[in-house]
Length: 88
Figure 1: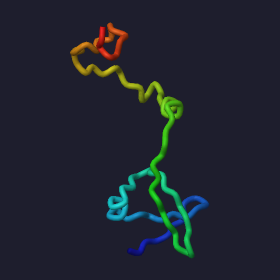
Figure 2 (figure 1 turned 120 degrees about the horizontal axis):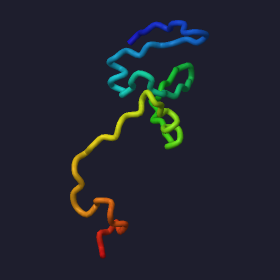
Figure 3 (figure 1 turned 90 degrees about the vertical axis):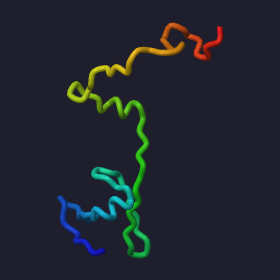
Figure 4 (figure 1 turned 180 degrees about the horizontal axis):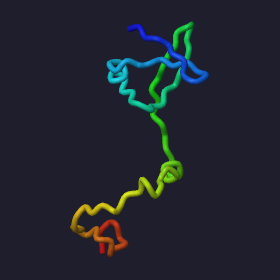
């Protein structure tokens, strides 16, 4: 498949055709790793690792949602017993 290199700011960009992106499970804003090997450009999908601190840093008043009810508590896990095993 042939595509065109375009200028993007001071860098160059290559558009990934939809069929290839779907095959490689690459989505918009995905992080990829670039390498060269004997004149060949290699693009590798990278799974990002997140920390709780970095995720919480993204929470704002605009994207914070209300508590979601999942229904009435059932079983022994009603929050009144500190013994997680259920043994007495």
